[in-house]
Each structure stands twice: as C-alpha cells, then as structure tokens.
Image (tube, rainbow, N blue to C red; front, top):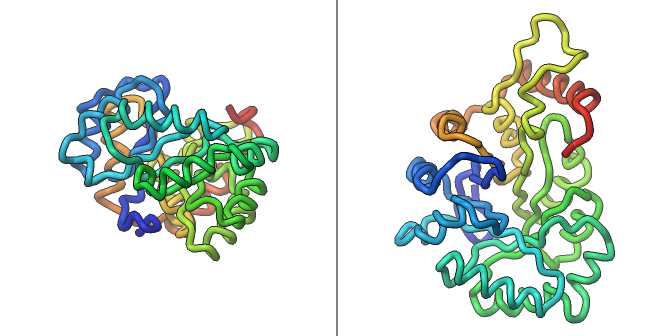
Length: 267
C-alpha cells in the first residue's frame, strides 16, 4: 500500500514501547524482515539509537517522529535537535503529538505556530510529510479536512472503533494515509473479561493487527513489542497477510465490546 507521496510501505510499523526490553539489533532485525515504518516519540531509547545508526538502510525506511512543539520558535529548536540526534538530513513524517484540544490546534496553525515553521522545513526537504496524532476523532477529522496536514495518527482497535465512523470516511475521500496505534488496546484485547462466555478462545496479537489492517482505510498498524519473542511473533504477519474470516472478525468485535465495557479506563 502507498503512504501518500512516500510510496509503497509495509503496513506493519514498529514503535518503541516505553517499558520495552528490545535493543538496537532488534530494530535492524525488524527492518531486515521487511518493516519500513519506524515511529519514534523522541526518548533516548533503542529505537532512536537504531535510527541514528541506520547507515545505508536509512533510505529504505520511513522515519516518523512525534513532535512536541506548538510554536514556530520551539519547532525550529526541536527539529534541529531531532535531525542531529537521529543523524539524518530529513524526517519522513512529523506529527504534532497528541493534539487534544481546539486551543492547541489554533496555537499550532495560527500566526507564529509550529505549522508555520514546519511548512517552511517541508519546502526545504527537511520534512516530507506532516500529520497530527490525536485521540479526539472529530478534531482530527476537522484538521484533515482543513488541508493543513498530510496524514493522521489515531487510535483504532476492536474495542475502539469510532474511527470507522468519524475518521475513515474523511481520510478515504481525501486519499489520506492513517496510522493506527494501540491496536491491542494496551494488551486488554488479549485478556479475559468478567463477561466472557465459557470456553472463549482469546484473540492473538496477530488477530488484532489483522483486524486493523483488514480495514483498507488503516494504512499502517503500529506494533510496540516488549521483547524479541513478541517482536518475532508479530513479524509473522509479514509472512501471511490474510484477513480474518467473517466468524473471526465478528468474534473479535464482540470481545472488543466486552473489553471496552469491563477492562477499565483506557490508559
């Protein structure tokens, strides 16, 4: 599948887990297995170090960075730090990180806002695509329709399906890429709830990623494994891109409803 002007992309992307036990070698292993989308949130971690040491592999992957800046001045400083820290001349995708309120949107897009600087950086080739990361679907959809960004990064999984109504119709009409995060609902989709029927066979992580990617409006599904074993399990998806059967799909939707109702507040 194509990721806007960046071209063809592997639909399973790799993100860092804040409590993960992976190493730089694991990131290179994922790339060697076919992963091309790396999502980094700016911490001094194994993923950032791996990106900085990509060498000739840099041209084979898309580096997406979560951007904290809200003003043009802060954006200039942050971009400079990111480029130097990652030892790269450009970032493939920069998303304004967790834009959750209209006031934030106005600050970013208004005079002296971060978007002003980032658009200049995009013209200079330092940023290839701009996007927004948000939990607020109506706000994200409105930003998409504004034409000010090139992609969205939103929550989507079997327990949180609001994007199907509030995001995907807009992005599909705009031919806009969407990156989905928390595909496992922080692991809750892999666990029992108090309302599960007897003998329930729990979904696997692969089932959850297949659920997300079965929707063509979800361009990339992010995985954030904690261990090499989890990484290798998730990478099995690259060997078998099949979707869920209708029965499997409906069973996962039903489990997602129970998870949403009984698994507690979303972190």
